[in-house]
Image (cartoon, helix red, strand yellow):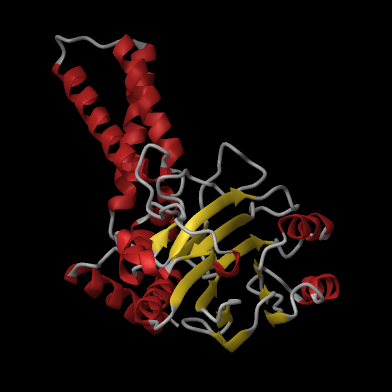
Length: 355
C-alpha cells in the first residue's frame, strides 16, 4: 500500500506539472515548468508503467488514475514529437550544391564570466563558419574576440555590455544596413544586419537575446515575449530571406516559441531532427533547447550540429545552409490564425507598457 501511495503521489505530481504551463499567465514560476518537458514526459511514462504493477482493475480510482496519466503522457508526447527524428523534416535537405550559395553559421552564448576563451576560439577555427553570433560578450570578451578573429571576420557589429546582454556578429561576407536596436528594454540589444553572399544574394539576419523571467529580478516573461513577437513581425515583413538566431531563453516546444514560429513564417531547424539541447551544458539530465536558429523557406539544411564544451553554461550550435530560393514552395510555411495574431499584438502591447 505504501508503494502504491507513493506512485499515486508521483503520478499526481506529473499531472500537476503538466497542467501548470497551461495557465495563460507569464509569471516565471509558471513559464519555467514548460522547460523540462522531455523530463516530464519520461517521468509520466515511468509513473504509468510502475502503477500498472499495483493496478487493481476492480478499483474505480485506479481506472481513473491510469486514464488521467495516459492522457497526460499522450499530451506531452504530442508536444515534443515534432522535435524527434520520427517526425517529418520542417527544413528539407538541399537539392543543389552551389558553394557560392552556401552559408554556415555558428552561434554561442559564451557565458560572460568565462575566463577561458581558448576553447571557443579553437572551435570557431575548427568549424570555420561564415557567420558567428555570440552573446554575453562584455568588453573583455570583445577585446579577445576582435584580437583573434578580426582577420577572419573583417565585418563585425559589436555591443559590449557588462549586464550579460552584450552581443557580437562577425562575418566573412560584407554586412550593410547594420543596426543595433533596443526593441523592448533599453538595456537589451538585438543586432539587425544584412549579409551579401558571393552571388550577391542578400540575407537579413536578426541576432537576439531577450531577457528571461527570473525570480527576484524579472518576475514575468512579458519583455521576452514582446521582443520575440516584434522580431517575428519584422521577419514576416522583410523583403529578404531571414535568419533569426540567438539565445531565446525559451524552449522550442513552448507556446511562445510556437507563436513566434507561426507569426514569423520561418522554419525551425530542429523539427524532424532532434532536440539539440543547448542548456545547461554542465547538467545533462537538466538540459533543454534554449538557443535557436530559424530560417526562411529559401534555405535548405546541409548540416546541423551541437558544438563542444567551451566553458559556458550553453552548448554552441553550428548550421550549414544552402540558399535555394527557387525551391522555397516545397516548404510548408507556418501561418498564424487571427487569434494568434491578436495574442502576439497583445504580447507586444504588454511588453511596451511594462517597460
